[in-house]
Image (cartoon, rainbow, N blue to C red; front, side):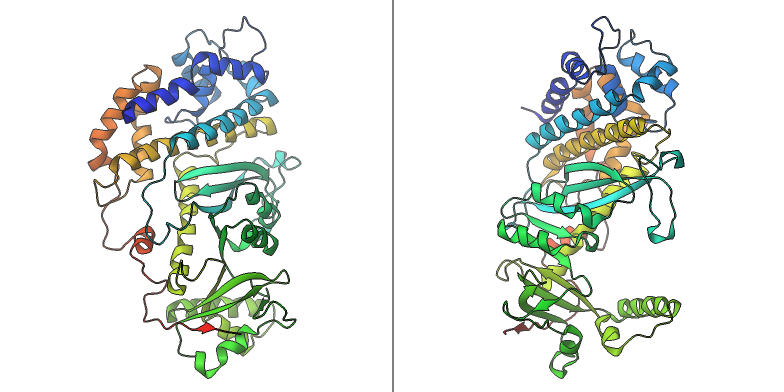
Length: 463
């Protein structure tokens, strides 16, 4: 089956009138069989990528619904009442769950790099917040972390597969929910041979232990003040600062120590990189500034540690060398680009209203939009694989879908197949990343480039 036909089939299966109507009846969004609103027009209006999807007024949404179904003649007030009802948020959350399953069924992994082919998936968990009207503080309290003092926020906690470029799971939480409290969520989805790239905010040794037991892998920066032991039976932790001050270590750029992490004694490799001078200078300035604010002085041991970047992992040394551990970890920053696209292009954080059910409905709707974009991106990744020497640009893809509302019109007029064919023809000039002299992080992983481009010397510590 051609790519355009597969895309049309996906939309026909998941957005047809009967399926959408049944889902609406199940979640009591539509309760009367005589209702002129069939459900599919509401669902499509809320999630099909289009200009103004997030910022349209209620009147604008009503107008768009009539484009899908002329009989869906709702007033702005009537639509407001429906969106503010819990049935609407339940409906869109259910739609997200169904689309998530269907998208996963259709997306096939692209060819992996030799370095990463030991892992089934490259996973990351991170969160993004959106500021709400302060009247929602009781339902979605904000946080003072970072000195923002935001009264009301909603947090989207995302578990993402970097190897496929798709969402594994997303859930909504209060803005003041600490990331570490959500760290265990990933264990529901971890499978054997998966690799989890971990941010310090989610650092939790009990999770690393569970991942190790499951036959999967973790890679994280080392949390300050977390103990590392050379032997499982040791009661005294390694003094890393003292160890690095030894004469034998002073000129090494990469140091690897095999041991055990935390009181749980999780088997791990500690990888230590000497940073470039400009990176160290910046860290020292920031650390000294913070210490002065607190009226403290920094010990020589603390200063020494600022010269290094430290990672912990249970990835086997024969799978990935110490020089490449940091390079692979840098792939985690792709999640920041995901959140940036969500906010700058899909405007997922544009949330008007003081009704919590309305906010939930809007977010789940836009997460459905995210899944549609991920599916289209995966299809075009597969199309261009091996044909071009540059990657697909998700930013340009979203711009293409939104431009002139062509994608939305194609769905309305049942001309989606033709639209996909036109996209294929436009791919070389409109959907690919611009060529750059510098390599992307994925290219650096593919070519096996070290974390820091310096001459490296490696040491294996044997207790």
